[in-house]
Length: 110
Image 1 (cartoon, rainbow, N blue to C red):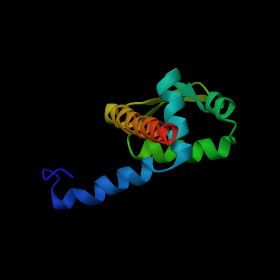
Image 2 (tube, helix red, strand yellow; image 1 turned 120 degrees about the horizontal axis):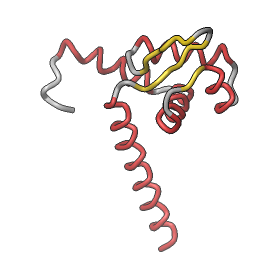
Image 3 (cartoon, rainbow, N blue to C red; image 1 turned 180 degrees about the vertical axis):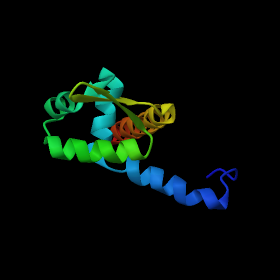
């Protein structure tokens, strides 16, 4: 962990990881990163989840300032606004893919 993170910021960092440590929220973020701005109905259809569940998780992401919300008539549209989330997902996904590849190589050698 970076020494540059001051002691008083550690709880904020931990909270960010808690927000991102939920598979439903990650699925919502993945959808928003792939498709761009979407409304709740679009996300419900794409993810096969209930409107209440999607809305609850969008509120958490909105409160964490990871997504933005734009009202248009009766619909609310959400978009990822934190570029660090995209970079972090790329880093983690690349690392997991690398590990899976190495494990596959090891099992095929033996």
